[in-house]
Length: 131
Image 1 (tube, rainbow, N blue to C red):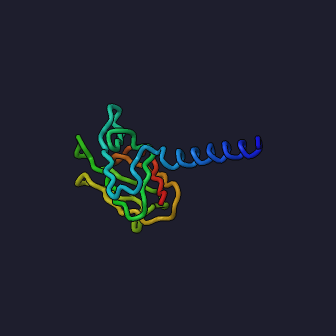
Image 2: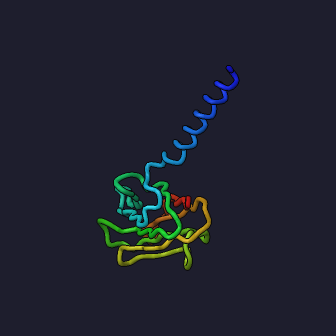
Image 3: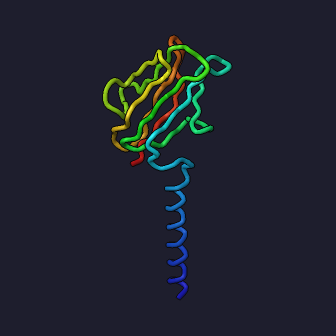
């Protein structure tokens, strides 16, 4: 009887851990549209925010639209996936009008990229395609 109770408890814990791991990202699953705010930081480097928080790691799904929108500056900036882009077309996109927009179409996985103003070093956030 103790073995059955132990198995039942272990199964319940495993189920809770599985549920928590799929729901703990803090972001909506497959939200459709994702707007990442790009603004100049006090050091001149781009600062990225997403839904009022960090844009260091954003979960997206195939078919989702991702936009990087410049705020508080008129500088040209670039979004560069360095040849491993989760969308079709050029892996490096520039913007002189303040918006870079892509539609996700990729294998599941993690995609590091850089965002930089013309002539500056890039910062390195990532998109995670999870469905």
